[in-house]
Length: 432
Image (cartoon, rainbow, N blue to C red; front, side, top):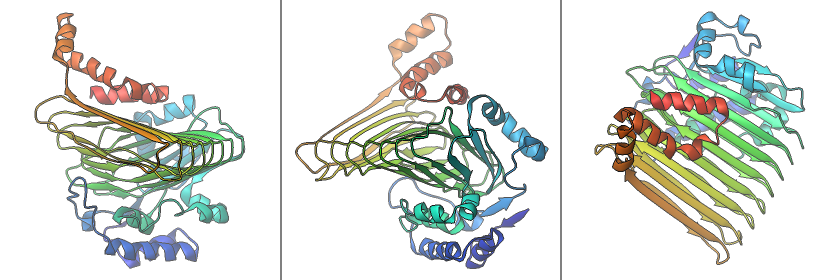
């Protein structure tokens, strides 16, 4: 086991040396650390009430990158089995990467098609030129305090390259698990979908619950090349002691399509705004998301769509639910620049408040800078429909079961976009 409590220059040097990284990566880490010290917390959104001195920045108890569950310790194997990850691997997936604490501990690729699918640490060693070309090119280390922190201490994550015209029969999946008190997880994910190729990628996240805070500050960079298609589905169910502060961004070339399917169920605080930069003409970006905030939870989530190319299209559909004093906010940006003529954007935000103590606000930034494009934005906030609730209860359902059915109907648009096994998992999580 290797564990470090205090973040310092000496720790970062030790981490990089332990990973046997090239000198340029150590230089990058140290530069990111200096920027982290300079930058302040975001001046918008929820209060981030934790101490960086209390976070553990690296832990690994397992040997890395096993391809057989028989070689993984019983404790870790049982954890992933209970989460349904092993069963999903056997039934639904073309490949999996499972991260436990700070490192990828299990990886297996089933497909024989022409792809690269590795942990990000392994990709740095095996494909250094390809890695360096894309790393830190879309999400810069100095964008905010948490991209800088990720740049300094990143560990684990997934690296995927899908070659031209390659289409996988089934999804690839990564699963991230935190089991240690106060641990920070800082994975780095890079996905490149080459011209006319397609990929469906699934991400799952969970953590054991403790009384003190943990931190998740991942970075995701996705490159959708000309005519390619990418779908990124995630259900994060962090425990309510986790601060989930991530940066996810895709850049989409001409005739490409990027879809974010984003579910936020757990965490104490989430700040997450998956983004599409629609660089090429006729590029498409879609985001459909749900956020379910319960007691002591603040979910500040949304999406960003930046239209640069001509005839580009984007759609944001956000569904929020707040219960028992939870706060579920939408925060998003759609920007159609002057050169992005004949572009179209749609934003729809719907919220249900299940009691008088819960809250929801919408913080949109919408900009259209030419006369040939159009943007529409619709937002609604409502309470549970009493007439529908009465009707269901008059047919023998309990109030709890009736509310559950109304919520399931409210998020039906989101559920139908999920892979089957994730839709089943979402049902279970919402019932809990």
